[in-house]
Image (tube, rainbow, N blue to C red; front, side):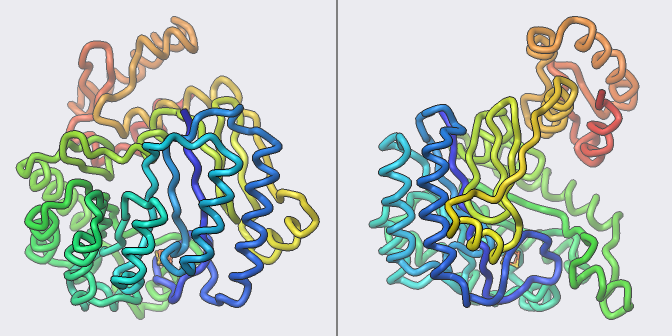
Length: 376
Ligand code: SF4
């Protein structure tokens, strides 16, 4: 099995914290769609996924909800004619609350999209304005009911915590809303200040308040407590799902399943190599007009593969499987990893559950640091 990710590199407005690849000019949208169709054909010939059956398709970005229905139809038709897509494939589309109209929803449903990922981020206008989000709280509050009315059953919602001004009470309100709406999947991210983003500059110029690490840790603990009490599995460090509602597509990334990324800046992985397309719309379009995919590739060494596994598995509820490390990388590596992990078990940040290294709730606060310390 394998997955396909399609990056749609356009947004109506730039959120100030965002470091994804996108353009706020829709000027090249038509050319982009043509280039994407050409890439689908060329990737089919390259057979990076070795003819694997496609079980998940994910339209991300950027803002895929900005595509016209005809454009989405063309892309889906091209995927269907070039890849072996299982009839029960999970097909997710990311949308922002301001993109969602009754007409679009019913057209998306007819196209076979069966899961929506909605970037709500907060239900308070102050937070949305602070982050320069294009939608408002009223739009966010009505989006799920609209999608349900159009026949959608599967949703995931994104929320952001640790925004200066987001009090613990407001954060609780946002999480309680998700639970009350009967939403079965939630992704939550701490607001981060990435270099070269407008937010980085605004904070540097003292035009915005800096983020507070203590607030972020406190709100992450609040998140774990709330979602666990509401019956959600904390199945990945930033993701919570009711039993049976995990994201198949994202789970593939975390379990080392192959995926093909299409579109500018999209990444691909097939177990032994990683490749990524140029993160520039014009270069992407020009190269595909010459029938060339503009990408770079890296073959992963054994140490890189093991580090990748440590990084992703520690973020998962199931943890890092030492038996699997032994099978794939040898007994010495497994024992070295076990020894290195001991200092974190003494701190109660990691527990050993049936030969799996699993982060405790306290350890989840330091997940990246722990994984980095365990790297080979
Ligand atoms: S909508 Fe998403 S991709 Fe676009 S700027 Fe905002 S966070 Fe970035």
